[in-house]
Amino acid sequence: MALIKWTEKLSVNIDSIDEQHKVLINMINEFYEKINEKSNNELISNLITKMKDYTLLHFSMEEKLFKQYNYADFEQHKKQHDGFVKKVSDLEGRFKKGEIILSFEITRFLKDWLMDHIQGTDKKYTKFFIEKGIT
Ligand SMILES: [Fe+2]
Ligand SMILES: [Fe+2]
Image (tube, rainbow, N blue to C red; front, side, top):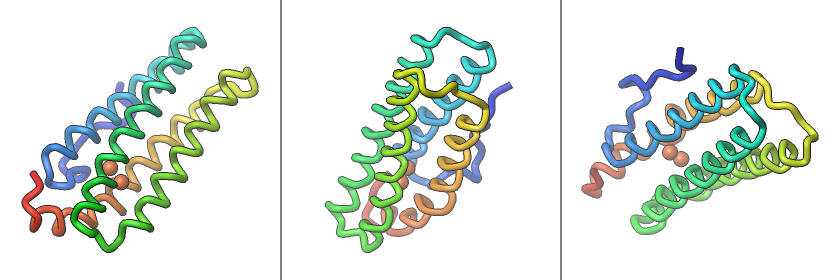
């Protein structure tokens, strides 16, 4: 069973952004499955890198829109993005060096962070972006 199920409560009401969030959710679900299956380390390591890269791409897309439209909450929002990227990069590095074993706790952190961020922080831009005509 998937760890995260996308439902309307995760929607920011902007289709292009919802699609990216769905990709991220699928990646966390895949990561969870691989850990459960005790899949090989190289596969998991590649998956973390893929997840980090996609996260960076998604964050930079949101931040580009913030800058372009002078979104007031830009700094605060970016701080959250940066904190998460740092955490995921740290996990990636430590796992590759064999310092940590990936666990359900780590998966849970990724899940909780993303759900909280979408619902608590991303959703704040919905009204602003819709007014700017972003779909
Ligand atoms: Fe987002
Ligand atoms: Fe965000």
